[in-house]
Length: 551
Image 1 (cartoon, rainbow, N blue to C red):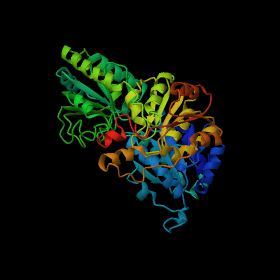
Image 2: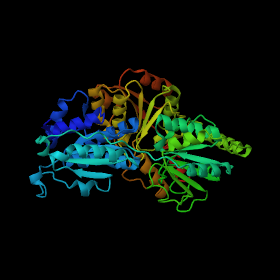
Image 3: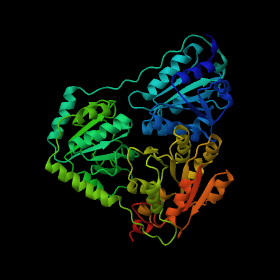
Image 4: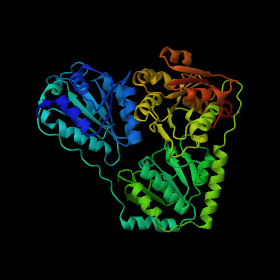
């Protein structure tokens, strides 16, 4: 059957079971938009900025485990969307970016908005593929989706010249390529078990490659069967029940030195499903690079991260869910010494996660809002954090479990929160999506609340407004105390701003009944924005401005 290339692309997306395509429309891919008009299987979500469209695709990929898709126009559209490509790379998330390109006869002439995307995106993606022949479009799309999902997941860019989209293409579409996951050899599994049997104080660091129902169940089964404490890598706090006596904390930014010291008492570290980047390894201090202080076992479904930065005693290239599921069925290796280790860690974590307000003289302690959310949110709430100090209260004081779903940008990009809240509302409308965002991030991508209204998504958005780029202010106070520059923010009345979009809005001020205001927001049936007039003095869950200055 003969069809336009644009129609063949849509057919290829449908064959990959893509349900949503996020975009900002552009003239460089008008034919593709026209082809999407005819699709009754793909919803085209028009966003207000390409970064928002890209972040929505990243969030959907995190939720489903399948590649998220967004489309952008040439030049400015692609450069705006590149922030999401960087996040997808840093977070190991499968994303396919479709880019409209100048016509083929204009390539190399410096045409209007022309960009060489191989050079521009080459270091950010797993692959950049520019298609020049109609006959290769179907094959290219299949290969792009496979590359995005195989091995270490990541972003792939497909560049589509404008004139190509209207050409006729013939031939059947190739079937989607299956994604293959390696399995551990019996010898590798046995070698891990021998090390575990000889360990008195083992610790497992769990990462995003365990983000699936099977992975979560296998992690719990292994930890319980063998009495192994579990520390969760950055933004993966929902993979293991934080109320379990085996929970050893969340490895993020700002963890107290005493927490790292406690974990370093382990005599065996099993890193499972994480690439062991700088945050998961606490800036390469645990496990220490390049030579760890403890024997290290690293399990990941791709060889590239294993032993790349930190010397690894036993590297296992395997699907971590399958391996842990197998090991959970082996005879228990729990010992009285290990039980004492679990109890010691558990006592520390119980004390560490307890919340007590600091009652700042100005503004609201944002921890009070997080504590109220943790107490009142549905058990299956989707919890979305943007980048910033305000998220430290979520990671330290909200005891999550696998019934939750946590979404956050491991790569630390500001602006992820609101677009991710929109995507969560579209992908899982039956669940409540709660977004925690700062005043800086809110004015980067908060306009995507218009996309929420247009599509019926209903996130509950809590804005911590302390009139500051708080993370950078923290670093300023540590390194250049009292010399504040470029971090003070002039903000709108966020509640009034939200109402201008037609969104229900509330404000939490100092002296308010925080729990009551949170309850009203969560009870509202639609989208809701809550401005929290937060304390700047209580700048994070770990510090105050005074303490940072040595006071």
